[in-house]
Image 1 (tube, rainbow, N blue to C red):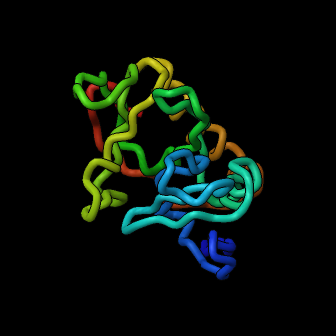
Image 2 (cartoon, rainbow, N blue to C red):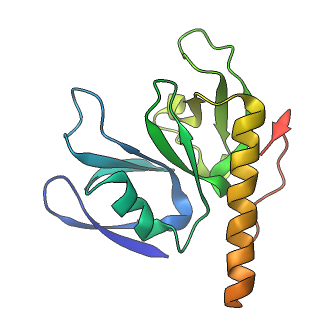
Length: 159
């Protein structure tokens, strides 16, 4: 489903909700302030609004798991885009776990975006992501809607 957003320059943009990987507040000096990064497989954009207002536009179409970046800021992950969660043993990242992006959502232009550092432990993150998938499927059943299920790829702690 295409979701219409307004980018940081005021231009109307459409994003395929199925390709979204993560949503997070802008936080770095080179990012437009008071915007939300909408990170999707082939790129991303900075949308006007708050993390909650932007994620609410995607919530009817994808299962969003609310977690925390290693620094503590909230992040919303499309649970269907995450292949699994592994222990963070990569020196340049600071966090307890890494969410691993699945092959269908990989960013080939910026490979570092395919491992998302999280504050949660592997077990905590895995439980939250599984919970988001389960809750979303339950809502779809209640609404009488069928959706394509996420792939069954496995990693040590498959999410």
